[in-house]
Image 1 (cartoon, one colour):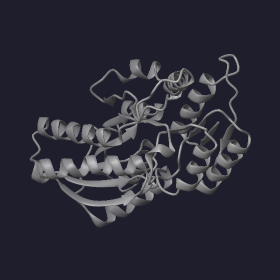
Image 2 (tube, one colour):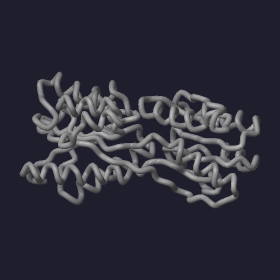
Image 3 (tube, rainbow, N blue to C red):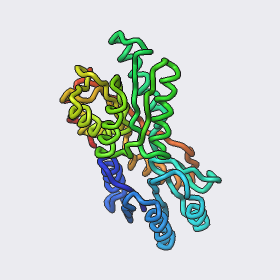
Amino acid sequence: SQVGAESDWRTANTESMKSTFSEENGYELIFDDAQQKQENQLTAIRNFIQQEVDYILLAPVTETGWDTVLQEAKDADIPVIIVDRMVDVSDDSLYTTWIGTDSLLEGRKAAEWLNAYTTAKGIDAKDVNIVDIQGTIGSTAQIGRSKGLEEGVDNYGWNLLAQQSGEFTQAKGQEVMESFLKSYDDIDVVICENDNEAFGAIDAIKAAGKTCGPEGDIIVVSFDSVKAAFESMIAGDLNATFECNPLHGPRVAEIIQKLEKGEEVEKIQYVDEAYFDTSMDLEEILKTRAY
């Protein structure tokens, strides 16, 4: 059973689960879309416990507020597999394992890329002015990606002008970038903590009469690497995108097979992730993308 929430990335994550846990593969999947609301996820988990399911897969909307319901699942002897965002609980034995992406590593990779890119262009670190359109505050992705960037700022001596949440949406990303452009006339880089925010930021940059991308005034970096991000790089608007791999289904299936055999599983399991920029053959790579 899975408690999920939607977007391009989540759609791919959900489809990966649905195609993996199909009847043909010997599973019965009860799916509940919680519409990005934690109270809906809590209700769904309690329903799954009443239905006496074998496993619960949870893609938590936020990190906190899970202790009570996960204790109920534990009391019912139902293993809970956490997918994507992490949970912050008082007792780690309340869930069996967590599978997801290393958001801090993603943030660090982006900082390393930015350092290499600006150095190759001959830009002095003290002249690199950055704004950060953060994700939903308190989400695992936001915490990791912000921290990775902040470490880069400390390591390389860049100027972090401002940070504000764009709530992982295009509309809010555009709104935040509009306000940044009004407040600062010397922005060199915008870090967008997902691709959707970047699309909004790019619209704001163009509306303000500025340019972005490899040939533009402002370097735009984002995360997730959905297909539209490749199109944005091919169009010359986006410089780089750092992958957040949503195809977790097969990894979850491997874990369930191990648990079925009574084997131990690692508490934390990261999926493999890459990054993409305009120096690559993006049209060829795009043909192979599943999301």
